[in-house]
Image (cartoon, rainbow, N blue to C red; front, side):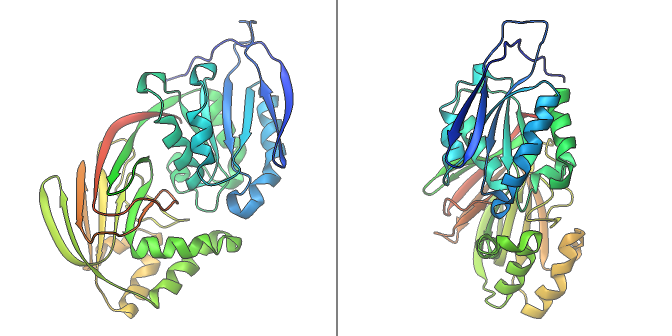
Length: 331
């Protein structure tokens, strides 16, 4: 599908948000220009602040393509969600998350605070440490020109979205929700982002020293599953972290979530298994079980923290559903 942009008349106003300068482009009456009008939610803290160094190049590329862009910078956790929630979506042809997986998570949840009929296509500029979902679109931080050109083409596709209703919070995700060891490692990685892409690997190895299991009780489309568990992940896309191919068979538009369960195992066995996650061959280990489903319920353990799309929010018990091809993205 190709997006037909609205017609716009250009007027730039220079403003300041925190330490990041951003420019607002107003709608135009010149219908011959037929220029794309975008809202970009930019996270200056993405990749431990390294994203700021790329902002000038991003702005220059959009300007060279004749695209009208409004940049808004996030200033604190959850701000991206608020910015999008308070936006009049009808003023834009597209919404772009410029940051990592956490920025995408906030922008997505801000979008879903609007009525479905008002949604506009979502784009992505991968500027974070992980950028897991971006890999499904063959986007990497060092190929920002490609990411911008992809948005400029205006072509879109429909992808699945996960919906989570936990004991204390509800939210949407496009990448993954995890629980157990994967969340523990992710929380450590948050404190080690200055290491860049190796942060997730180092955090995982560190958490192996404190490996714990727990009794898992869950249902996948009505099928009951119980195990002595180390972690469980529910994936819409294949990757998590940096290059961990956690769900090699996952597809972002098949109407299903891929469930990966790691049962209890010795630390040395986990260390042997760990490198295989980069290639997706961990699924060949006997301690790994894989399933597909549209509705998953986790009843036990209770009170465990959830890790959606690079963030940490909500606690078990939890119900998770796949909303088939519910989101339009630039692709």
